[in-house]
Image (cartoon, rainbow, N blue to C red; front, top):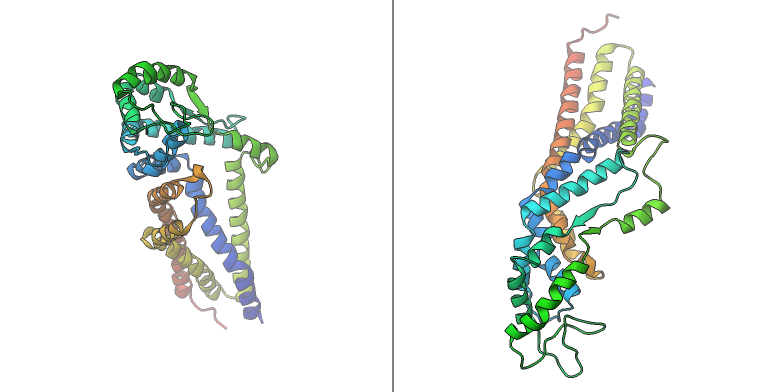
Amino acid sequence: MRKLIAVLFTLCLVFPLLLACQTAISAASWALNEQFYIDALDNEDVYQALLSDEILDGILRSRLALPAEADTSELREILRSILDSAYLKEQTSAFVAHLFDYLHGETTEFNPTLDLKPVKAALGGDKQAEFMAALVEILPVCQAGQTPGIGGEGQSACKPEGIPDEVLIENYIQPVLLPALEQIPDEVTLGQNWQRWQSQQPWRRFLPGMAVPASLVLAVLSLAFLAICAWYLTALISSANWRARLQWLGGMLLIPSGLVFLLGALLQGNTALYWLYYGMQRADFQFNASLSGLSVIIEALSASALPRISTSFLMVGGICGGLALGLIVWGLATPRKAE
């Protein structure tokens, strides 16, 4: 009867708690680590994804109102020469730092910004002539009813017919470019939608006076306490002697530890990336122009972050699995209780 009760408790309570506990500990080791996100973003593949043809082409066409047939390849290369790895690393590191300052309660608002001063300085300085020449070259000739210019209300950009590109640059593009750059703010706020959502869903603190990271740590510790209590009490129910109890403790811990270790091994290989790429290829992001190129960024971030995530699961599963084997050996080495 004791064995039956112990088995029922194990299947319904102990195994789920132990598995959830080990999974939560593995996830918390990187989810609450600021350096993990900085290292994941500081990757050449991620930078290439952020500066992919899809993203830069979408920015250029939307800001300059370029027609669909315009070849933006040269303009994209100019932007890539401005937005180098050092600039992207500075921006992403600042974004992560601001986010964790907010989560830790060091700041009351999360207002991430994008610093555009280096971009404005480059377009108004050493990259100005190159950018204007490339822009004028790809502008199509205006058709009947079109007004020459860099786009307008309901029309695409075009240039007048019969005027040399050098004259257009000197008399129109150059006088307009610098005032246009001055109208662009030095910093662009990225958190408008965040602030609106935060005001509607005040999730920042789970408990009064406790920030999100501390709340999550408390939740993981509470889950671990419940799992250990259920694990230990079920072993006491299973038998009256410690030889069998120790083996029971080891056996109950070994199975969830093996599953967590197996999850880490799967994340370490190419299986997870394969299914991720498979899903991204079939996801439709075309319904929103702002999501153009999102799949490329997600794939690059996943390839950069998954090895670190996998290591956490392997480490937790390996430690708990070693503890389980130690308990089993300890139980086998314990002398049988004399009848």
